[in-house]
Image (cartoon, rainbow, N blue to C red; front, top):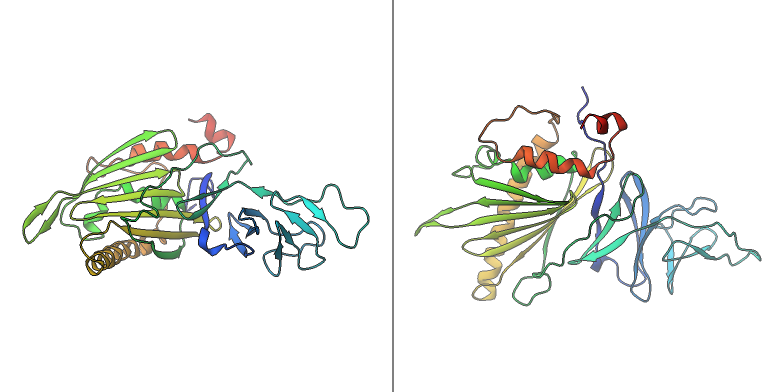
Length: 319
């Protein structure tokens, strides 16, 4: 039995680094989408992500390559490539190879994340990512970051946002939240009522999750305090994803109170995610799951999700 019915790697925007990991002159080797890549920031501040292997004799520019000005220099024979991937210099040759180049990936820096556009058929970006007002706001804390490598796929993780019942049975929430999902092209909004019991009685609370494809989501919690998770899930290959959660909390009271709230928030979300990992890593993906009326808007999610794949012709014809 095939574990998944979907194509292996979806299309969309995916995080490959944090911006502060790429100071000017920095070179990072990357492995995503089943490919070897290299990221670097030029001395003038531009971030570039290129295919990693030099077209000359195949050296990996991410291992020993150096940034000189606005170029990355191959560690093997010092061939020079600019941020667009074009070869702009071979120091020992009179005639530079005209066709020498590396594929350049579309890059955006959003809320401190370096995002790369992946499309299985090489098409350019089909949507953009939003600004995040909480990022670097003086009213919100700096990111508290967490990271996991998980043996699953993007869609399996993203589906959790609409799987209302699992919050009670896997994570022990007192009630099953009521969730509503709406779709606007590549954007999926999920609103959940998440009222909380406190020593002073029930407090109204909500969770709003806004997903921009499978790689970037903003999850806002509103209740006793306001919190935000910038969630990113990036395919490493057909079977593994690189998950980064960037937590920020709206400042309340003094620094100690805010720090305590943030620590508790991160611990609870981390607990819940790590409870999901054994399930994700050992489940299969039914193309036609048997659902019931209390499952949440999984059908809405599944229909939305189809747009992020390049389907074989026979699958497209069946739609």
